[in-house]
Length: 570
Image 1: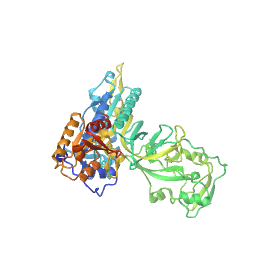
Image 2 (image 1 turned 45 degrees about the vertical axis):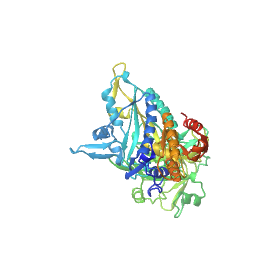
Image 3 (image 1 turned 180 degrees about the vertical axis):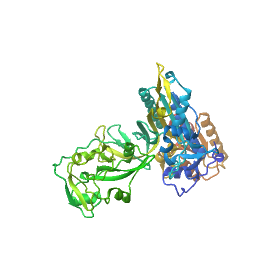
Image 4 (image 1 turned 120 degrees about the vertical axis):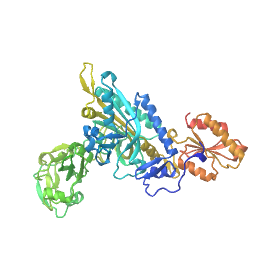
């Protein structure tokens, strides 16, 4: 390819709405263009990156015994109603009616469709296991599309689905996909962690997210330095904390005039925040109704709303506003407590039971109760893990120090079990001719997200630094003077030689000044830049620059070609 023929206009300034590096750099480098909020066109260089990522995915999927297919983007509502997700998925599902007033949606995912296909096309245990995948656009009506390709309404995704006879088979398929995903992201040149995750709207019993580590990542992950434990913040656990036992005393009501917050109460009563019991009222939204619930956590903790949502089986949860709390309990927020609270469903974080000499609201303005005992005084409730982990906690596996990091999810694997096969009656006949539910797994990779995440992880003040395997072109040749026929001829010969060696090379044959060419090459992020100037004529040498390190080498022609091959590991 020649730059003079390439549809690629670079920009000096970042778009005003760009908040993270990948959004800015992918637009500035001419790889994507915004059509509407959350909707982008992929221009030739961007599309080449996506193709390279897709090809890596295909190779690893096919080598793992998977089969590629293509399913419709438009899906009938009946399928989603059968699985129960037509309402659960919420407003992100793009719904529409056809001319006959029938309901449809644009696919955000394909569990319902693939289950229906396998149900119709297979019948015997002899046809299992089966692992199918596709690479296709997906659609979600994001409330607030932002961060460019990170959170868009239309995106390119690989989604795959396994079908097995039993849980042992699912374990094998899941482990195969976990390993394949690790190879994919290794080949893409990404630094990542596979973390324990929540299954969300997809459902299922077990899940891992593949998170690319970057300071601008939208997700917070927890990991241990001393072992392989890693989790997203919503699913993270920690080693149980043993609190010092306090002397058992009778509860006592004390005046706390105009003292409401955890910090204020702890200071006023001279107690640690860990000894306070925080009482929060949430509004849980279900398919047919809403309900207020009470949640208890220790004073230094925050509620893990994902774990609470999963416990409730609700569509959504949110903190109730002050007016709703006062109307339901008769108590002003800031003085709520679980003792003698009105009859609301009670959810007690397991750590609350270890409080021996605690403090909680008295359900009366300007009063709190002291000497509260978690096991004695909490009453009946559903005990569970409802709190968020903090950096003061320790690893649940080895007890080592944990760390927090930012990450961007680029892939996720789920053990679905029989969630969809049961809902859609997807069965097979076993060795005895008896119908059994197929056991499913689900495996996704955000292809366009992987491109953006790579930029988040690999960039500097000058532009993108593409890993070799997914760069739009691996080498750019830059003749500094296109008016010098001898320089041009040297560049053309080298261009032809590299192409013969199957090296992915582009020639900047434009008449721009050398400085402009260099700036564009750095902005776009070609891994290797070869500058062809006067030294090529008089000394038969070229300057080779490695984008990732900034290293510049003056090399003879044959040595330069060998170095390029070595750097590209051809």
